[in-house]
Image 1 (cartoon, helix red, strand yellow):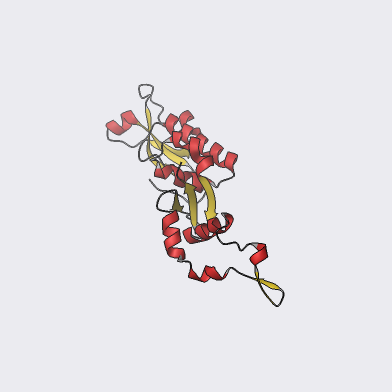
Image 2 (tube, rainbow, N blue to C red; image 1 turned 45 degrees about the horizontal axis):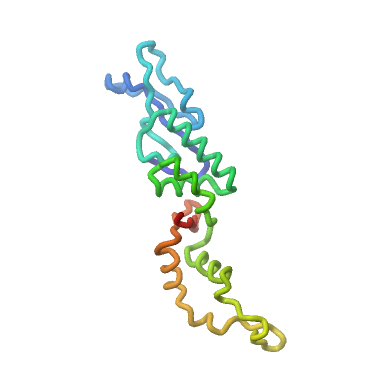
Length: 183
């Protein structure tokens, strides 16, 4: 399987009877239209198969109908959550292309980040771990000073802990990572 960095989802649909006769007869089509593809015009050849995929996490070959359902489900998930299609693809890769995993995508999706560490730092701040209560805030020349304990935090250890159980990431082909919550 070849994964693309854009929103292309294509399949190489071929005729099974021709393949079994030692001939490759088929064509590359948009995966969202794979179920309608007729790669061979011989009336006694009626079975089609996707021998290759581009941009679909199927884990291998599949039927044209399966490819079309997967492509349609991935596109709907990306559109419904606002996540890039590449993130949906990366998520499904972790589940070997099991389309039912998409039922949990919205709950699992934590966004695109420059790194796991950036996500872990943002999480610590969002949880209030880094804040200094306003009545105890340190001020210097009228300016609030960041929490003095920040320089003592081992961010590598914190990041490792965050991504050891409850969160995981996949590489974003365009740079950075996609972060997911384990659900």
